[in-house]
Image (cartoon, rainbow, N blue to C red; front, side, top):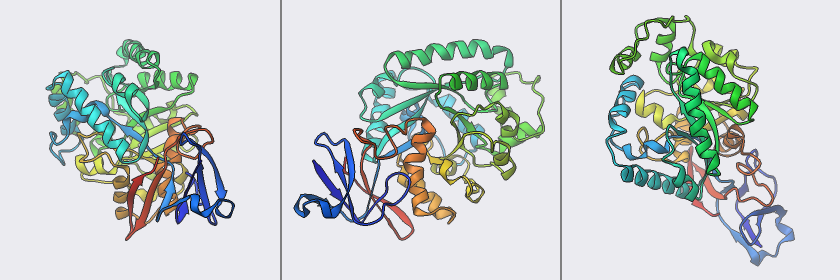
Length: 384
C-alpha cells in the first residue's frame, strides 16, 4: 500500500476536512481516504500543496498537433479556419503521427489523464490505443447543406465504428452551427442520446458567428467563397446560433466549447438541458484575442470544464495555464470550483466520471500535486 499526504486533499468536488491521506493499492489504483492518525507516520509520503485527481481535458484536436507555431495569432476565426485548411494537409503521415505522439506525451506529463478529442479521420487511432491517456473521441461531422446531412451522417458512422471496433470510446459531434446544418445536428443529437454518449459542438467562438446568424456581413462569407460553397439558400434566423439550434439538444451531456461570445439569454435558452460549458481561454486569446464573460456562468459552476484546444491554437497543452488565464480574468470562481473544472466536471461532461475526475476505488484516476500561490495555480508534479 502507498500512503500519500499533503496540506489539503481535493477529491474532485471539494476539499476534504482534517488531516487525511490518500491510500493507494500496490498497483497505484485508488483504495480509500484514511484519517492520518490511523496510519504509521513513517509510512506516509508527505508533500506541500494540494492532492487532486488527474486532469480531464474536455476539448482537444490531436490531429492538428503538427501545426504548432504554424498558424498566425489573432487572425479571427474565419481566417484561422482558412489557415487550418491551407496547412493541415501539407504534411506527411509520419509528420502527423509524430505531432500526435508529442502532444499526447506533453498532455500526460502535464497531469492530464483523460481527453475529449475531436477527430475527422482515423489516423489518431493507433496513437490513442498506445497512450497512457484515456481518450473519448468526438467524430466530427461538417456540412451546412441540409440535403447532404444523411450522407454526411452515414460517412460519420463508418468512422465512429472504426474507433469503436478499435476498442476506443467515441461519439458523433457536429463541428459548429455555421458549418453543420440543423438537420445534421439533430441526427447527431438523437444518435448520441440513444447510445448514451456525450455530444459536443464548437459554440459562439467568434462574433462573426453571431453576425452570420443575424444576417449581417461576416467573415465566414470569405471562407465559404474560398471553399466554393454556394450558401445563397441560407436564410439567417435573426437569432444567436445557440438559440437557433439549442432546442435540438437532448437531455444528455452536451459539451459546448469556447462560448466566447455567449450571452445571458443564450445560457437561459438552454437552461433545461444538460449543458457543460467548456472554456479554452488560451485558444480564445490565440485566435480572437478575446475571452468569455465568465461572470455570466456563476450559477453553473458544476457544469464548467476546460480544454486546451489544439497545438495549432495554443503554445502548450497545459490545463493549469488555462485555469490561470481564467484567474487573471475574473474572481468569479473559488479554488474548489476551479479544481472541479480540471477534474470531476470534465469527466462528467465526457461521461467518464465512473473512472476519472474523482477518486474511485479500484481505478487509477491519476494523482496530481498542485498549489495556489499569488493568485495562480501551479502544477508541482504528477504523482501517479
